[in-house]
Length: 219
Image 1 (cartoon, rainbow, N blue to C red):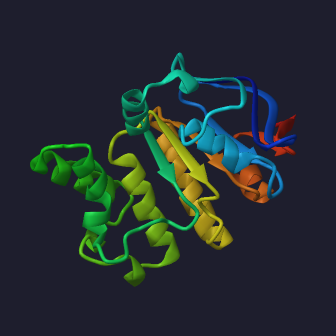
Image 2 (image 1 turned 60 degrees about the horizontal axis):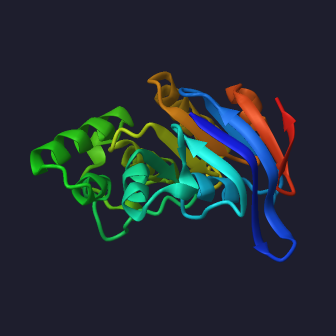
Image 3 (image 1 turned 60 degrees about the vertical axis):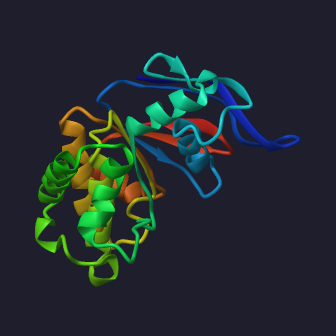
């Protein structure tokens, strides 16, 4: 599913965010990326999201070298992904329903299909009863559930999450991780970047530890 072959990403002369990194993530796998701040976790996620391309090496997803995609292919590729942020990135002036329906509307789904799919994912995360609420009326855990629903609404093949529990307490963090486990159990590949080693231990999935842009431990 995902293969990195000697991938490096430099942002200045001799300044590498990722250096000579190689990894493989199988289809349907759940993998953590961990390590200290500045280790390269977010850079790797940006490369996977195709917001950037490697300076050296190859990053291959589903058999395609991401650096070789045309602009139109990049758009199609991103439609196959779901992304969850630490700070939720919800539109404050919009309702829960509007926040989640935004993605299928941009993708050009028919209105009836937008409504059906949006309600399905809201029900799945247990927040269909808050459809008319606005983000600031929700708790942090509820906001992250809405963000996860938005990431799921296009039925992605891969979910990428960057510190999705960074603003939550330990109990809520585990609750959110259980959602990711359920998503993974349905066959979706899940990659979560987090510095929380205790959470990784409790969830019990493969973890790749990065430091200075290189994988230094696999557990």
